[in-house]
Image 1 (cartoon, rainbow, N blue to C red):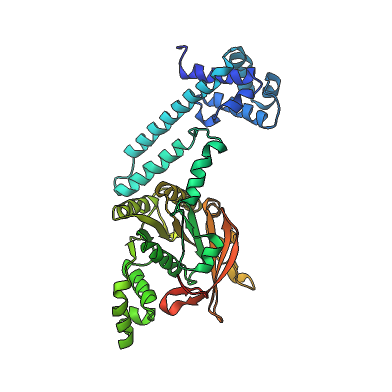
Image 2 (image 1 turned 45 degrees about the vertical axis):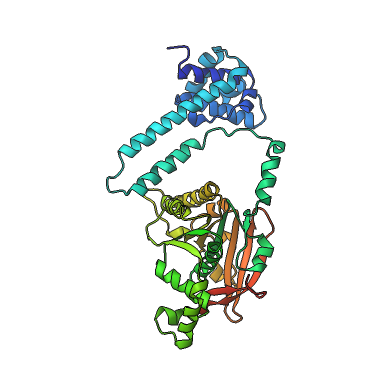
Length: 410
């Protein structure tokens, strides 16, 4: 065995941890899974568990928690090896680099064995997801708060840090849609999620270009709803081509004002890779101002993961897309049936369908509901990572596919 081989490096790392009573663990960013030797990984995990309890990592304590075979390795090889404590970070980086290399090689092998019937987008999604997982264990550079002072101030004072929604009352509550943030608007079916998303997208589309992934409605259906909202005509009559003369006049008159640059991808079988690809294509048309997905639970990717695990991955990927493009990402989500069993029918964040990860990943969660008798439309800002929560009351005008503010539209 060469002195600079990986097993020796891993053994030396364990020896340094033991020699320092566990203090070396505070200097490194390493996990047990990154050890190539599974037995060494188990020993390292035991060391980190003891250290997490605030106890010194010593031979006696390790022998109590390890199996007989692992204990013999500690008492023999680990206890006998010596290493310089100041080189702990160097050894950890070498172990982490070797682990990353193994993971990437595994991704390559997985790509070679992919189903030949997968589309290019599906293959890219597989590779991206597994590379993201491999990269997730890499250590991020250390920056103190004083070092981040200038960039943080710049981020919140940029003219495009917040984009107003069409509703002044909602803007008062949240400041607007935030660049680089994931905004989840959730409701039961039939409440008006798509109407809300399309109205926001149209507003952002007046400032630049918008990528809208519609997994439920066709681009023509969405465009008709946009026309109805713009012209103030009945969506049902417009969809059937049954507008009266006054209605058709309104459509014709409003056409020059219909300038919102919303690009709709209406393919049904879409995952995060297609959302990202569509956003990149739209960004080449102009200044990308927003990305919309209608809706999370209809997204689909190849793989045998449980549905809940897939939805959790979708929400995480949408959050990464928001940070990658530094624009607001608005994702619609369904709620489960629990609100229907409550006297007031009001939803909570616990009602997010199929995955609590959506709430965790989202920077903002807005729950939508309606009161039919009064045509009141509620936007309950139930989570706001950078501001307050609030209940906003608006006016539902479903006949023209629009939600209005009591204070008037911007």
